[in-house]
Length: 397
Image 1 (cartoon, rainbow, N blue to C red):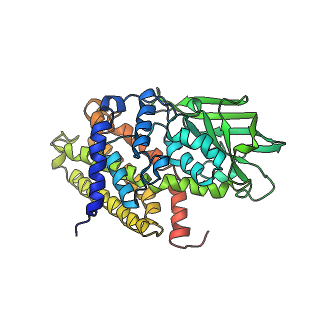
Image 2 (cartoon, rainbow, N blue to C red):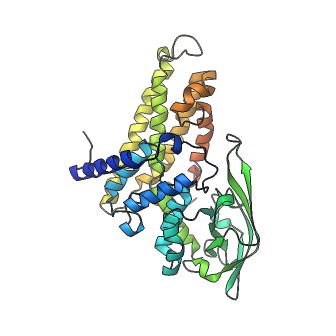
Image 3 (tube, rainbow, N blue to C red):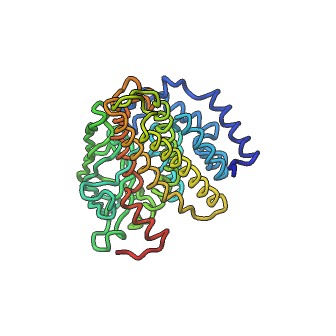
């Protein structure tokens, strides 16, 4: 059976590809080292604005918000082409993937006017204040406190793993506004000016990238936040959280699927490399088995994604995308581990493998990074709970 898109959808692809070939920045510009996920270099601001003006920033949205009312199938084509070509839409992904949809869906007209368009046009940068030292996957355990005092909230507490906080203008921050109700019911979302007195962001280095500072601890000490900065209703932040993260989860599988395909392509190119035990890798039955297994894996990921897309196009829930978040991230991790073991010391051959993988590291570094893929947007453990309870209908333990 051959799967494909309709003719009108392929015309959409042709229009997109033609436009990209004429406008996308040069690869050496796209590959410039990043300072954080909220640091907007001049070229990235200009590129995001170019996408916005042409309706290619968020194609499923209306033209006035940087889109062209694209159908689910057309949006899939868009993400396919952008991911395959490794072209970023933005250098502030949390702003475009989570915060902008939240402002669109839950923000007041005044909030949308103040923050939504400037965000889409890359005029301001954002961080997301969710995780805390005692509240990671269990976000509802957060303790950062916001107390209403007249016309302002007073915020005290700490966030951690806050990407790009030290380069952000604003933070969409999850706070506890009622400590006397069940933990899921007392959460609200505030928009906090990161330049306010009492806000301190402390960046820290990552083990695999010691020169790249993205993660931060953020401390809030008696920070004054106008009550007009409350997003949605008071104490209704948990419901908004589910909507915000659904935006992130909906297309995460595409990145994982194409990352697996890139890793698989590199692995097949290594067939003639010397094997640690003598001969070439292609002589090793384990290598051939690995190639076969992960060819099936990469195809299964794409087909499962297309199945979910077909349901979305009909207005039905796509449970496949919950499965793919788990399957795709763990499959990539297994591929990279098996490949590292197969290559032996060659796994750390940065000069040979780096440019072909993600242009910025060796096979073993990618394996170490793959552990992060099982955490954002819901850890593998959380995903298993969601699948068990919401997809399979199993009772809670």
